[in-house]
Length: 289
Image 1: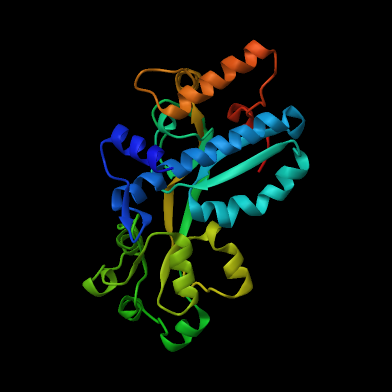
Image 2 (image 1 turned 45 degrees about the horizontal axis):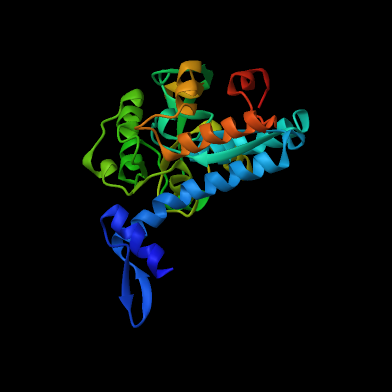
């Protein structure tokens, strides 16, 4: 083991381990390297399982999706999709920022925006539509909002990825957006912000379609009638055929995952075996979610 560690460190040119009381512990660089390769090892294990189980186990679709859309809209509809297409396994990964299909192992993505990513095809699922203020019933009881001035004095909860949302909502109502409204806490995800609103921390601004369940249950209420009509929407996209071919071909600068996949397919073809098929994301549009 010690010899293998020394050979790896010599090859990489960095120290991955340090000796502490006769034990090997990871250095900061070693921990970072381990975190990076762990994802690739997980993918390798998954691909190996797919090959060994064969086509009888069906198809898989690796789908990247914005987190709140996944939990609030997509996942509740997956049971019906599974009943309609029991031979398709949908694996979900949370991605809130744009990425390149060439650098990831995803087959398709659902994201929020106003256009297709370069080099992709697909379609818009729907526009986001009305964004409404939401808060807990207890917060509204303690902080009544009979007019714009009272509403502006309430703590506003913000989404860090949509810093202009409250300002745009105020403009849509014809109200002045003051400093007090801009000073509320910020959250990375809609689920965080709506949870904070339900806990009584303030008033959040959320798409109605993503908080319908909380509104029906009474966990959240809409304190005023004003809405912001969001023109952007949720897109389903997958890489164009040329990009998919490029991902599967080996190159001197390509990722080790792509080269390993190409070599595996070459060995399978030579042995006459048929590899486990990945589900084509181009067909997903025919399947209602």
